[in-house]
Length: 317
Image 1: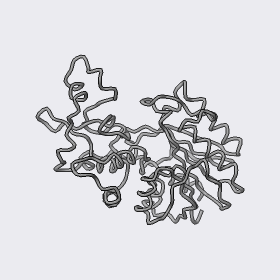
Image 2: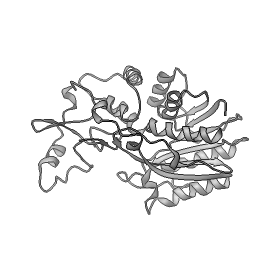
Image 3: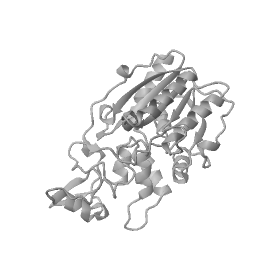
């Protein structure tokens, strides 16, 4: 592939595009599909585009050659902290939208050579795996050979214990190897943390504070809570309400949430990108940004995608 032609479905804020830019690869974006207006606004600002909101259910495949299709379909119904409604094809849950990707590929006159799908590892849970293997079967029906593995962001230099399943599908023979992915030593967490953090990030939620001090634990707090030391835990979309990534001990019996900038850094975005996002979605005075937290939590770790794309390019060469 001299120039990689890319189609982004469920594109979010463009983690795959950020990875391509970081790798300095020659690429062409065929199309971008996303139904969250704030994500579309962020994507346009980050990459100087002018895309409109699109619903994947209404999307018609373009008659254009595509080398790589990336789709990070909604994970809420597969998540272990969600309602676990699953993603069966006819269930009409948000997670079932992954089968819209199958429809799009089926409609394409020239099918993409490579397809990447990322989601939570909960898709392999006993009550969820039927949808996962149905997806693999559908890809096989379309002529693809699939390989999948759970990857941890910490193996790619990011101090965030974020485990996600990646499925790499190749039309016909698939020589992709997860064993060949370039791993990197986890960088120190302090490189990702801000200094002089505003008081608005101090934890004041009574259920969280009592959870930290009560024995037995306070049952009013329904999330998972860890005090961050060497690495953060999985960044979610509602960092202040349910800080699954953990909280930071700032001394004196006080704790703080990760900031939006820290969360985006821990997803592989640079400060120049975050400056654009903060300008695009300005905070209200003395408030955190639910928009930026959500966009960080729903994104894909850029560094993991870089390793995957590198391996795909090697196979093509």
